Image 1 (spheres, rainbow, N blue to C red):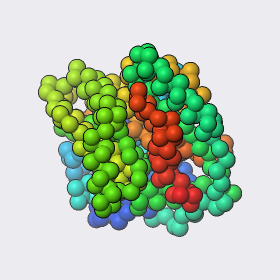
Image 2: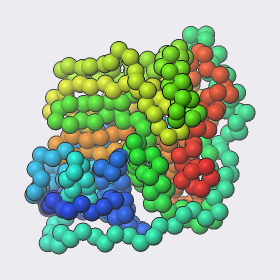
Image 3: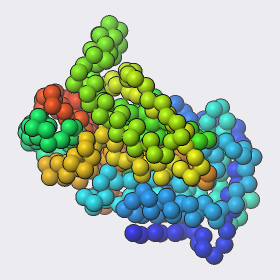
Length: 421
């Protein structure tokens, strides 16, 4: 476990100040060209974080939860918007899918400045020993589109990946496991360092219904909310079951109807719903799990979706709940321990932070954690390269070629942003 504290929280209490501000326009335009920055935005609401007051690198969400509780107790917060959801000092995080089988580290950071918007109200929070100047930072200049983007392959060929899908289908049909989510990757190389702010802009523009995120070199636009905790109410959006052709007009309506009737997709979805409901149940005083899913339409795919809600006590914060829910059957499989073993043995891919929790938690335990899907990772030692990821849930009726086509569809948002879609 590694903790890197940039501000010395041990020697003095920190002061945070939040002020209401006029609408600043698109939040992403305040992301600087260099230096640490984060973003978590959906439909124009959310926040960007500038700078890094503290940073914690770890292997577990549980350790991060303890660290943030200790840090938040040392912050004195003066606010013009007390009690507002998501307003004030935040910890922003990105966690590995399987820390026992990854060379990547999970990270939780505390931004020095947060600029946010929610429900038509806008604010800025600054954290530090003293900060008399509460003027907005200047907006950024133009961002650079990727130059010379080229696909350079992944960790395995398409034929190898479909062969692995076939092996997993055989295991499922022999009752060794019920569902396994398999991922594949694709690397893209540009002639110059990739400006992640440009990719974020394109994702926000093209996929406004998703949660667009930028944390520690990973950028994406995920449709799946692992959980939101707000004033004792917890919500989790479960997605599993996918179609990916046209979503407009008669064809779109027909595909949505077929998805809602598909036994294969309904079976895959039910595994995911059950895993989330069972994980949440010990923390909830009451829960509501809809009897049937709805169909969520995105620009290039449709998913079966179920929103689970529950009531939790003050002792159950967003980060602790995320630890209890991850990994769900939507990104891992059922039973979890068997699916993890099969993924480790057959997938031949270090997922890193792909399919791990990404989001934020506030000082009172409220927060939002999505699943880091439809994204890619740029590492500091190779700024011209980005590794993209996509996955598919494998059940007994899965067809390897169809599952491959599903992963191709899920790569589209990032490839579009890179100029390759």
